[in-house]
Structure formats: C-alpha cells, structure tokens
Image (cartoon, rainbow over all chains, first blue to last red; front, side, top):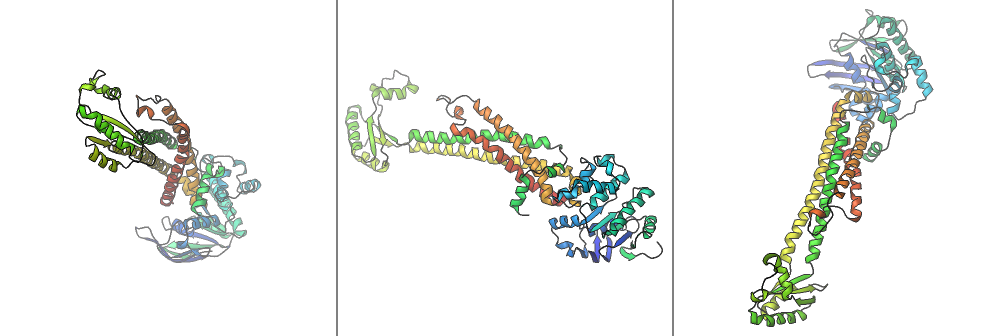
Length: 223
Length: 300
C-alpha cells in the first residue's frame, strides 16, 4: 500500500532520514515514535506525497511518487486521510462543511444522513453548525478525523493527533482509530506519547516503529 | 485536464466550490476598480480609433476623384490657354467633367487670406480648372505630358501630395487608438494578476487545506478565477456605461469643430462598448488562471 525503499530525505541542512525501508501492509496498524525533530512528520509527508525523497523510492498504491503529477497527488490524497496536530480547517465554513470538504472538492454529493452519522460517531453531532474557531482542541481533532475518513480512505495517517488533548480525549480518539482499523483501514500514528502506544497495544496488534539516528527501527519490548 | 475542460470549469458556476474560498478579501475592490477604470479609458480609445477611421475616409472622399489644373499665363494669353486646356481635357480619357472656375469663385477661395475686395482682374492670378475623374480613373502622368506639350503654362494637381500625409496621419491615429486599447488590456491583465497573486497569497492556508483533502489545481484555481472574472465583468460593465455616457455628452459633430467634435460613435458603433466587458472578463480569466497555477505550484 505504502512502501519506502532505501529512502533518504535531506532538508538542505543535513540528512534527516536515511536508508528507510518499510512497508505498510493493508489493514495494518503502526505507531511511529521518536524524539521531537527526529523526522516523524517528514516521514508522514513522504507517505502522502507532500515531499519527494532525495534518494530511494516511495511507492503509494503501487506508484512511485516521483512519477505522480499534481493531479495524481490530489487523487492519492483522496485515498489517504491525514490528521495533523495543528488541525487546519477553513475558518469561514461551519464544521459540517469542513468535514464534508473532501467530498466537495471531489465533486461528490455526500448524503446528509451519512455526514450526520459520522459527526455523531466522533461525538460532534451537536456541533455541525459551529465555526472552527469555537471548537475545543479535542473537538477539532475529532473533526479532523471525521474529515480524514469521510472519503472512505484506505490509509489514515495521523501526526501527533493527541498532542493537544487530555488523556481522556486521547483515549477516545485512539478508540476511534482502532475501530477504523478493525474496519480494514491501514493506520499510522506518529506520536511521542508512549503511554498512548502502551494503551493501544491492549486494544490492537500494533507495530511500533522508532526513528533513531535517521533510520527506522522496529521498537522492542522497551515500550 | 485539457485546457478546454479547465476553462469550462472556470466559467461554469459552482456554488459549492465558490464557498471554499473566503467571500471577500482586501483585493476584491482592486479588480473591480481596475476593470472599470481601464474599460472607461478603452471606450475613449475605441472612439478615437473609430473617429480616426472616419476622418481618413472623409478626407479621402473629399479629395478623391477630383483634380485641379493651374494655368499661369500672361493676361492676354489666359483665355486662349484656358480654352486649349479645356479642349485637351475633352479628348482625355477618364475625365467625367471639367470647367474653368469663374473670377467670383476664385475670389471666394482667396477671400479668407486677402479679404472680399481683392481686385482679382488686376492681379496675375492663375486660372484654375476643376475636373472630375470618371470611374475608370485618370492617367495623370499622360495628361501632364500632354499639357506640357500643348499648354506649357498648365500644371496638373491631382491632390496626391495632400492626400498622402492626411491618409498617413489618419492611419497613425487609428494605430494609436488600437495600440492604446492593447496597452489598456495589458495593464488590466497586469493589475488583475497582481490582485490575484495577493489574494492567493492571503489564502495560502485555504489552498493548503484544499490540497490536503485532495483538491486538484483546476478546482482551486477555478474558485479564484470565477471570482476575479465576475469582478472584472462587473467593473468593466460599469466602466463601459460610464465611458459611453461620457462620449455621448461630448459636443455634437459640426464642421467648425472638425475632428474634436467628431470623437464619438455613430449608428451601430454605439453598441461596440458592449463588447468591452466580455473582453475584460476574458482578460481577467486568462490572467487569473495563469497567476493561480503559478502560485499553486509555489504554495504547495
């Protein structure tokens, strides 16, 4: 589904990732951990073709990202839901319109009931008409998750999705992601929250990857 | 996506897509104002261009098909020379009519310079013969040769030396009008491009979100292009109406005013300013589209 083969990435100020080879199989659940600045966000951006590797190959849905046109990248984004720590919404649109945005840009008419159900599933059923500025951090994160999955993506990439949330809200978001994985979605969560990873292990068979010295390793029992 | 499909997407209304870009921005007025002001000027440039064309036609029409023969001879020879010239003209192909001007007519011609009481009989003033060419045209050079041989004091003036600079002047004015319209269009395109760039930069966050959720460049560009095109169309319509009213308020055409009072539209020409708003909208569409795609590649 998404594969890295000897991938390196260089920001210009030195190599951030080096010799990264990993494959995200369909339906798998991965955590990506490592200290701040280790390259977790860069890894995710490489995975959804926001960045191109400076060496090696990133393959998304069997296509090398270097061969993708800008329109192709847009089509990839419709199959990869992305949740960022700093959730980016269109501030002039209400939550429901923001959540439905992937459908809007794809020219697809979503069923209003489906949207209502989705908002209800993430616990935001009563906030459909609220503007993003009036939402709390947890509500924004759950709104972002709803937006990321509304197109029925094959993969969900989450970058520090619980970074601004309290423990209770973090667990709620984690539960939603685990449920999605049980529906067959491939999940990759970048986080430095080891407690969250430990909690998840009791819910799902997750592999934990760690970035250390620019390379990705499979984390052991120390987590 | 093909250019045709891309352009169609930018013209056809899409309420959903139009909502994704915030409804107003600091550059909203700039496009409308620029299109309005430029179209206002374009109406005058158009009027100048049309007026210069009419002027060229008028000058050419007034002088075309006529010629003058000037006979310089001693007073006692003038009648003989004049009769000889008229005889020559009777047998010259391509001449519809010819007649010698009377003393009164020549006095009237000179009156603006010498006053009405000029004693024309006492002065050695050349006699003028006015001739009208037939539709098949006159062999001016052949006539000159005959006059040289048979009436040496007669000189043919077929107005070519007057017509040519007038035609050149009118043609230059016409070119100036056309060039002005091209410059106005280019200036409008440049201003709208600046406004579009500013708007795209101000909405960089919106664009990033749209790209993140899978929007293609055509979709994002179209949302901006439609907005700028409509603003340009509205501003241009206002400018066209204002410019046309300005032209209509100019003093009416009269002989004394000449060219300046002839700066306007005639007949169906009054409809031509209606073509300017669609042209302005097309300029805005192309300028914004180019700016949008360039900016999208920079931003994401």
